[in-house]
Length: 391
Image (cartoon, rainbow, N blue to C red; front, top):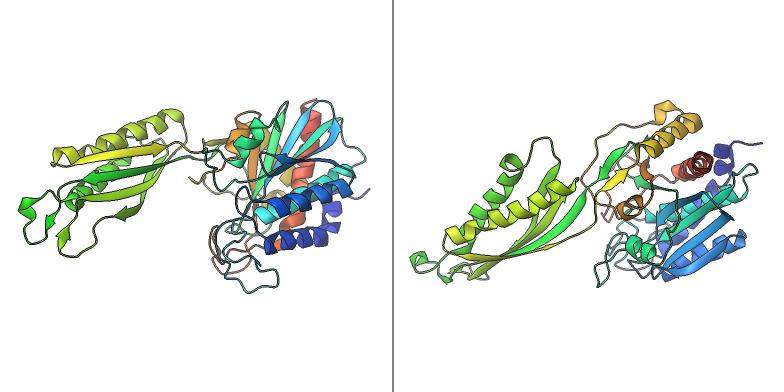
């Protein structure tokens, strides 16, 4: 019998076709109607039960029955970015693009479904295929696709859950995995510093909010250096500042916004408190402020045992030389809601295309499609072994 990697390799052309179809027809968060239809039809053509409308626009496939239940997740949404790549499979939707690899994730999970369906020695239990909408954004109620799928019962009874994420900056075919925190909790903030506007020639008659802002920014950047333990991961970034319209008028107010990132809840709360303290500099300088913080995705924790299994599967399928070591970043991922409910892990699949820097969320993002079958084999074999472990 052919190995699972060989079987996956035989699906490579199909995986590429699925990926390119989805790439050419991107749909942003909670609008993945065509993508969901493609997924459901592909699953049903395989003889796999497919439930649609889960988490608004998600799809859940079920293969097998009984316990244990192993979930495999792929996100499906695109981004509101206009693609700049001149390729045959370029986005046909102006202003929308698969710039984070979710087209590849979806194609890979369809490949996993085919591999597991055809697996003669598949252990007893259920494989739950979680095609998730809206990882990139939240709805009007502040809920992402993972949260909506959980509310609809898609994760009920799971004994473990796994996922992968394409990485355009990691050499093609390399696997990055590891236990512990794998992505940060991310919260967003908006603040307004108010003073008293006046003519630029007579600053003494007003309270300059731009001057106050400069001191507040220094205080904010001092939080990490002097208010948080050096051994804790934390970062506050200011992404936008707006104030004033004329070059000779000191405005009444300045607005700023940014993000707060951390791993553990204690540090997360500390950052909130310290940000409010830093904003208090405005009052010390004669102005005032308002601060609003919106709680975002929690930190994603990779279960060490599941991550160890992914590492062993990597060694067994493609060789230890394909393990890639790189420090964890502070990005955010709503798969964290799923790993909070069941032991799980997400690993990165390297897919660097060429010498050009093609970062995620950029109009020139693209991947080396030759790795798609590796992702399918990795997820399928990891799921098979989890069925055995969790029995």
